[in-house]
Length: 514
Image (cartoon, rainbow, N blue to C red):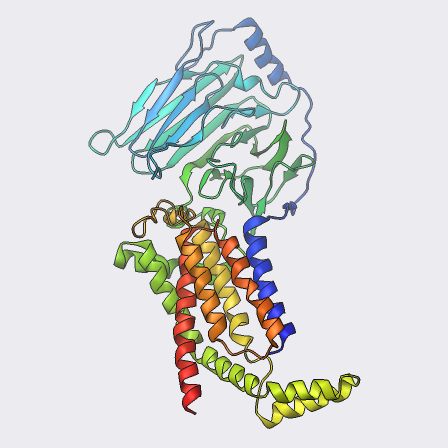
C-alpha cells in the first residue's frame, strides 16, 4: 500500500469523523407537495372572536367562565412528568420530566410558553393569535395520577361564543409520555396547531440538530433557525416535532390534515399542522427519544432517532447493543462485547491485509530502486512496479481493504453511541459515570492515543522514514479530536485498537517464523 493510499484513507476517516461531529449542513426542505406562503383573508368568525375578547362576552360552555375571569393554571402530575397548562388559550406553559436526570438536574422540555405557545390554535388571517387570548373553561384545575391511585385521567378545555366553539380534550396516562388529544372546532376558519417554541428542546448548545422536524411521505425533513421563508407542505404528514439530541415534543395526526407549515417567528423556527374546522384526533408526545417506545405508536415516530447515512447497519448494531446490555446490565461492557463481535467477521480479511503489508515491506528496497532508476519515465516505472507486484503476488491495495470495509460499521456505531438516549447517564466503571459524556479526566482518550501509536509501530509499512514520521502525527490529531467525544465512543475505539494490536502481534510473530 503506497503513501497516497494510506494518506487518503486516514484523511477520509478524519473528515468523516470531524464532519459528523463538528458540523451539520443546513438542511434544505424537500417539499412533498406544494409550498406556499401562509396567507388568509379576515373571516367573520375571527372578527366575532375579536369582539368577544374586546367586549368580554360571557362564555356559554359546558365549563363556563364568568366575564372578566383571570387565567388559571391547570397542573397535571404523573409518575413520569409534571405539566402545567393555562386556561388562557388552553396552551402548555411548563413541562418537566421526572426521569433522565443523572446529575439531579430536572429535564425541563418547556420553561415558558414562548413566542408561539404549544398547542395554541392559530387562525388564518390577521386575527391569527386571538384564540390564544380568550379564557377557556376547564373541567379540573389539578390532575394527579400515580401507580397506586388513578392511572388515567382527562382535562377538557372549552370555549364558545356566537355560534363558534373550540373544545380540546387531553387524556393522560400515568405510565406513558403520550397524551391522547382531540380538538373539535365549529364555525372557525382553518387553523394551525403548533408544537410550540422550543418545546421538546432541552439542550440548545449541542452540535446535533435541534428545532423543527417532520416525517412526510417517506422523508424526514429537518429545519432550523436559519429558515429563510415560510413553507407549506401537503401530502401524507405522519408527524411533526421539535427535537434535540435526546428529547422531543411531537404531534401525530390520527385523522386527515391539510398539511404542515414551517415558518420563522422572530428568531426561532416553528412548525405546525394545518387543520380544517372539524374534529381531529392526535397522539401528543413529550419525552425521551427512546426508539422502542416511539415505534409502538405505529406512526413512524421512531424515525426521529436519526442514525445517519448507514442506518441500515446502525439498527442491527443498536439491537445487539441493547441485547448485550440486557445480559450484562452495563452499557460499557455491552460496548466492549459488541466491539469484539463486530470485529470477528473482519479477522480473516485483516489477516490477509497484514500478510500483504508484510510482503510490501519486503519488496520496498526493490520498489525504491525502480523509482530511482526510472524517475524520469513514469510509464516505465509503473510497468516495472506492476511486474514486481505480480512476481511476488502482492496486492498494493490489499492493506486498505479492511479499513474501507470497516468504515460503514464504524460510522453506524458512531451514530448509535452518539445519539442513543439509552447511553445518557449510563455508568461504566469508576470515574466513567456517563457514557454519553466526555471522560472528565481524559484518561480514555489518552490511552486510546497511546494504543494508536503502538499499533502504528507494530504495523509493517512501505513508506520511507520521513513519511512514517509524518503518519505518527495521526494519533496526536485523533487524541485531540476524541477528547470531546462521548466516553462510549472512545471506549469502542480503544477496544478496537487493542484487538488490532493483539492480532498484529500474532501476525508479526507468525511472519518472523516463516
